[in-house]
Image (tube, rainbow, N blue to C red):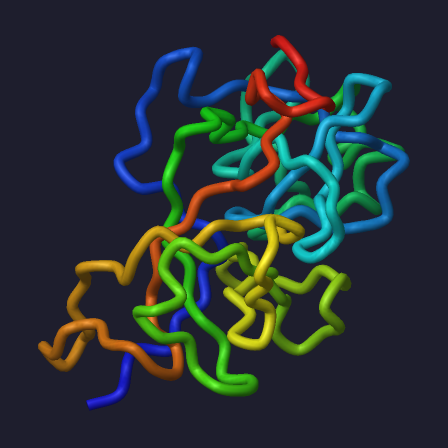
Length: 214
């Protein structure tokens, strides 16, 4: 049977709650890209985060797993939307919520993530375990961000055509996920397969030339 088609971006596997697992960061009001749950983010020199490209070699801080309003309280999602619309950050909406919005980031360099494979090109194989790979946003170009405005999930998927023979890609494939589809069949190699990956170039990793300490 076919694998479930349910893109949800990068989903943390067994996410902890300590300071090493997650942390709040200010969302850049100068960003032009909406932020969805499950999208990779990068920390700027300004101390603010923006959505990271799924293909460009930009070190990644982690993955967005939640949002908060000023002083890390309340919802950052304006007007009942399911994602963080950056166009709503200035002026704040509602207007009474003045101050920066925050994104909660799964920022542990060792954190593993589950991600769905796309349907472009030749499907990934078990032989690709250990390889580095790009991601892609469904319904958009490889570097344009897209998400589901109804449920707030990022539409990022593992790019079956994005495997490289070097380390010049954002994610590393660690294995086929041990999950079950809604019809009771096991997740299998092929279209929409679910894979376990890890961020390959991480801003909190000590060996990265762009490493940070927060």
